[in-house]
Image 1: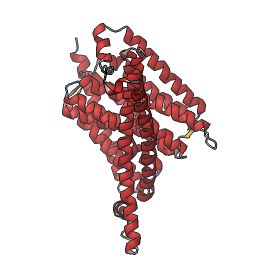
Image 2: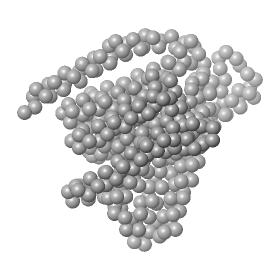
Image 3: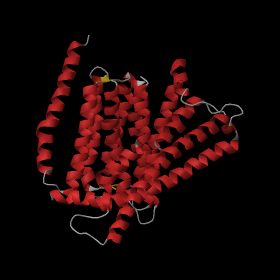
Image 4: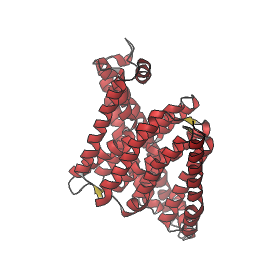
Length: 398
């Protein structure tokens, strides 16, 4: 099996394999098709990011023009807008009948957000963790992950499961709004600063312009999600892997680009608590909001009975997502910051996770050795290190 993956990757990028050499016109057409799929994927990704930005801008300005406070707009429209790419892609995949892609997108995004985004951000600068994040937001993220695991035990996320998740998302948002209104004036100003009303006389000050921004954002999200899903399905076929693996990796990373930009920019500006809060909040929204909406849509589509939870997902990937969420607690508690070495560990674990998925999908000869090394040495050493650090922190604390 060692040469199979290389042959398929060769087909993916060159349009032909080592085993057979088709006639030049056929090889040329295959190469053109793969090039078009790559361009379609990145074009879809650009449209998703652009559509999310336009939707947030238009909806925010419109809400502010109707007298809704910047604080409420920041905690609702802006927060939901950053998760729009995940929602658009997952709902689009459901409507196309590619439910594995939808669930893989959410689980993969949550793993990517913590391991890769926080890891890269911490490598730029050690990240400070707000005490509220440790006491409230991380437990909520862990609770949402556990709930998803429990709901998936029957093999699918159905209509009522999706409705429950979405209802919890609404309740969580209302809770944040009520809590924020009790914050100090300085904290409220900081939250509201994320949203600025349209300047009087500016082009986006008028109602038609704001509606136009919303419409353009929605159109971009629809086309972007359709193109990205179409290209992702082609990737899966060309590389000989399942829709689930593509959703867990390429699509998950692609739809998380807004979070990548936000967290890395915040880290570079020294706004280290925002870099962490963005990831934790996004993970909670992905489960409650994105899967909630996708589950309800899937439950209403004729011929679908909800989002099926693949056996491999329930046996491995969802446990990785839960372990990643749980890993945040001891890392955050050791000095209330994510050090550079911890960020490096996060990134290396993400690389190892993706490598395992690829090796497993291809049934590579190195899979057994790779798994043994990870389970016998790397994971235990990491756990022991974290436990020792927590004990030392507790011993030295007053």
